[in-house]
Amino acid sequence: MKTTILAALALFASTAVFAQAPVAVENAWARASVQGQSGTGAFMRITAREPLTLVGVSTPVARVAEVHEMKMEGDVMRMRAIPGLELPARKAVELRPGGYHLMLMELRAPLMPETRIPLTLTFRDANGQSRSMEVSVPVAVRPPAGSAAPHKH
Ligand SMILES: [Cu+2]
Image (tube, rainbow, N blue to C red):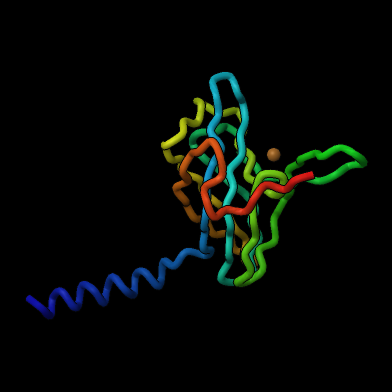
């Protein structure tokens, strides 16, 4: 019945709006790892729909996952965990090699190219509420076309 289909579509549409993702994620990828390698990085471009702070990441493929930044300390580039990454509304924030990234440590198994891993991103909004979103991230040896180039020094 036509009316039934329309009703179903309307219901689906309202559910989709209600469940709208807090951010848009583009060009996500995780760097492949080899046997014996304990950690790797995941990268993406995140655009929040409203001001949010990325406060955490988790994934079943790693025992530890953190939001990291790279920073020059004197002459040495170091990375460290940060408690949160500010995501201004409608402004793309790049996580890329040499910059902010998601650090996956104590990997349970090597990340194989041509597979995908689930990452759960946790955000805090302006009211202090947490929101999570799962993204499926392709594993690759090098950045996909269209993603930001690594920072060169
Ligand atoms: Cu790192």
